[in-house]
Length: 99
Image (cartoon, rainbow, N blue to C red):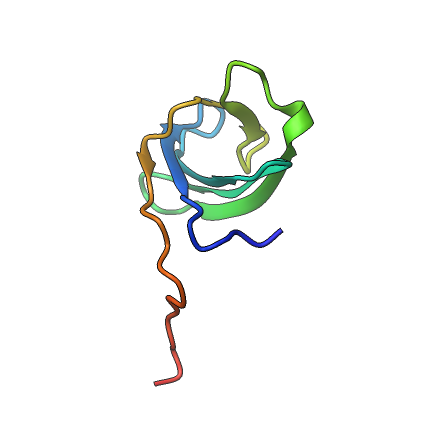
């Protein structure tokens, strides 16, 4: 499913207890799933990687939030309330890197 132009991006920041990296989780909520990505980086920047994720709506807890794994495999609890919410996307907003 492609997000419509009014879909907000939810941002979460935490630390992973498994690899001790800083973690940023970005997600969009759809009627049938949560879709997003997770990025981790170490304090010395020797680790900097990430992965996408999708969680079916049927797997989400009733109290909100969700769980997803860090790149290292450690399960992370993502709270119901995001750290920040991106503004609504403007129609036709694109970056042209060919200039």
